Image (cartoon, rainbow, N blue to C red):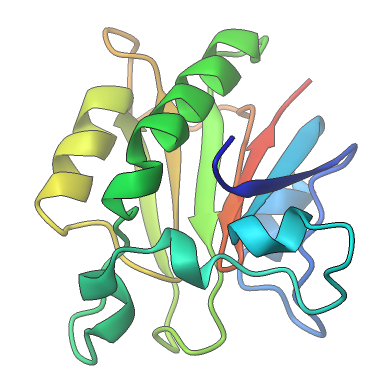
Length: 163
């Protein structure tokens, strides 16, 4: 991967003292994958694990109407990771969320969307920062309220996959 990835065996946010999406994470079992800047995987790196460089310049610099967008250099690897997590999930579902301390104060809960809808919204700058979305494979029912597999991607950008 061109970015750093840290895997946890349980869906637990690294944000303290109050993670934005603790309610959603508490309903999950499975793995969680945190995405970070490429420098975060350097053995000599001792700083905070965050994904600022993984965001596009437009996403980083926008002050109003902030949106989540993966920088072009990381987009294809990010897309492959989401698809792999959807394929590995026993319930074919991934919780994607961003939790950025400098992002919007009010979190967005974006509901259940298809993988193609996720990328369409991404390309149209409609995915919010400090938001969570449950991604389902294309052609699968969306809008249902069952327990889902989750993946999160942090700025914290994290992906949580349910077992």
